[in-house]
Image (cartoon, rainbow, N blue to C red):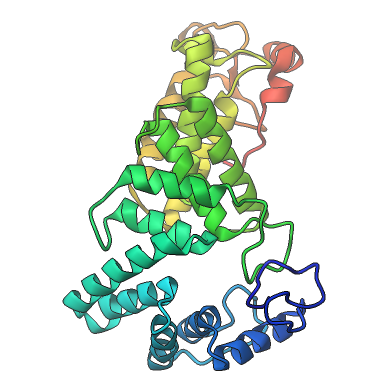
Length: 339
């Protein structure tokens, strides 16, 4: 954690020759020392520490008092050296705290231009985000897709304050999510490609869950929709085609839709609501026939099928059908869920 960043296997930083620390508290203290020496990246990080009230990204190693004015002071010092993240944070502070619209626009325009020049991982992610949202200039999804691709191409590198090689930088996770969405929807000048979308979205969900990061309902919903569309293109769109033992993506898709709905309880949005509607429709259809023999629920006594107790994504007319379907391949399709 030095001005070189990402060189944690080395004893000393090749740029400033400072000792590279791994202990969290020492990392944070080194950031503070580098900030006082005028390093813009460290000054920006100090601003974030004071803005969030802790050493962001380093757990509870060091606590700082939440102080917006102190944060702004550090951001301005870094901004004087044209650090794009600092300029963007100043814009966000003015937007949320001071409400100076003109200054916000000027900061965003300047930050967007500098981020395009910077070329590092965080700048690429932030520039792509500003292009996607139309901040500091017109909305440009093609430009956003290009810079998200550049950011994702650095997935094997460690960001400046990253501690563990086991975790992907947050910037890469962010880029992967939107590349997956762009490939799924055919946005940003990209041709719709379900398998490429599936790759990016699966990586995003897997790594985010591994790192205990919040996965947005959008990510679960988009991956579920991608799996369903791939399944329908391969086996058909009729409801009986959803039950292809050993090859069905439906149980996993339903699991993802349920996760999206669950996340929406804390972060309600359009995606979680859409997931809820799709989930209800899918479950209603699947409950209507036996997943093994295909008998209609109306043709069995009491008209009620029994759900798989593990995935709750397949229904059966009796125990024998459930056993046969399990042996035929549902065993590999089943995704354990709590309903």
